[in-house]
Image 1 (cartoon, rainbow, N blue to C red):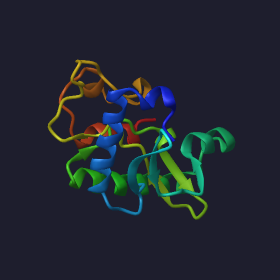
Image 2 (cartoon, rainbow, N blue to C red; image 1 turned 180 degrees about the horizontal axis):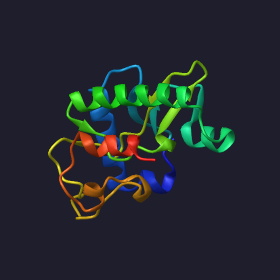
Image 3 (cartoon, one colour; image 1 turned 120 degrees about the horizontal axis):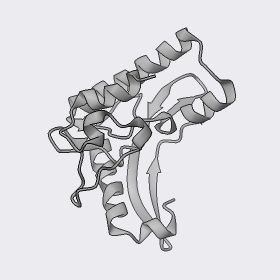
Image 4 (cartoon, rainbow, N blue to C red; image 1 turned 90 degrees about the vertical axis):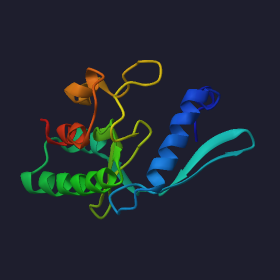
Length: 159
């Protein structure tokens, strides 16, 4: 469900619509499937694939450092998801542990394409603001520069 205070903001709703449009073009087992942006009884919602697991942030807080073999397996799956998105001309722009899920079987799923952009667009919004999570931004995104696939990959490969 979309929090009521966000559901009345046209800019927020546009981001959700953008996520739905971009995500429909990306079909890969390591990218969450988004089905619809809807409304029922005045409550707005996004319907998406259910991932029975936990996000990477929660996993790292609970478990601490991952064993190298486990970390490599996770990063490989994230890279496959990004490769699929990039092949469709989509840059995630907000890749962080909160947006990476691991299901009970070890499958990694990249989520939240709400800030995604098509290749060639700048890191700036229409208002000139830079969006994303500062701690995970690539330098060119933080500076409002032109983004490409490398912007997402910096997030995955950075310590």
